[in-house]
Image 1 (spheres, helix red, strand yellow):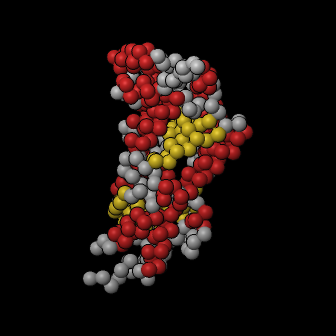
Image 2 (image 1 turned 135 degrees about the vertical axis):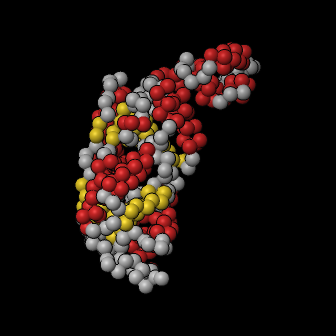
Image 3 (image 1 turned 60 degrees about the vertical axis):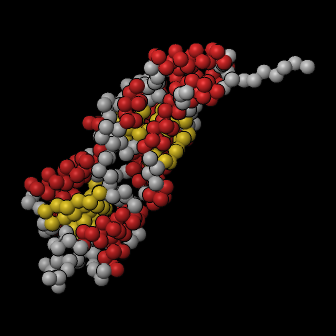
Length: 350
């Protein structure tokens, strides 16, 4: 009776070398991502344990996966109500299907988990390219994919923070200016904004332009940062309305927070827009399914997703892709905005 052979796996080598599976994969496949000292150690351990590459797995890793990776670092609760990503995915999905490509989607709640997935994808060759969203200033994903050009990345972000990675950029500066100018023309002189996380590059760009344009027009401007959730929108609205001199207009960085503002107003016995105006940065179905309907910035988000696909195909072929601007914002005026009341939000407050 013959003795069965025990196959040595990457995990076996990783445990013996005291490193991660990803590090072993980098070293054994000759990819960057580990130091020369660590690479030599891993190779010695692999040789001592008798590790042999699986020819079938190697063939698969060198072949196209026909999939695009997307890791969303956000709570599942926010993802479930955030229309922007649903619209973006719909546009991506339609166009990728025409190319016989799939979306590999992962949803995590912290940066460490997101980076672990990206490193594993690179090491295993799990995807042909990746999409990066909600890019932060100093985002570690940018440096990671600059170090690993074998997996091309396309960022939905301002080109100023992507260090040369291919990107699709929206004109957040002009969008902020449009909102501030519109509210100023209506007669508002004290406005506020409920914004997304401060670490996001697009939040910073919007913050900067809201402050600059408000100051230039002699307007008072307040800002609170949140996580985009309905609960955060409600809490921030309550806080702003408790100011000694509340703003006469509030801008929300997504639709669900603006809808929560309408609920808060109703509970407080206030009228929108008579007592304060409401504006949503991103337009969505929810902005038209409420009473009053919500004034919002509109952009063709599904088309933006569709526009990304030919860029991804170019990157996968090894072609250079320049920064691309998405379609411009349009301000859609609805029932939630009007001239400020001379009464103020709380006319009887001492």
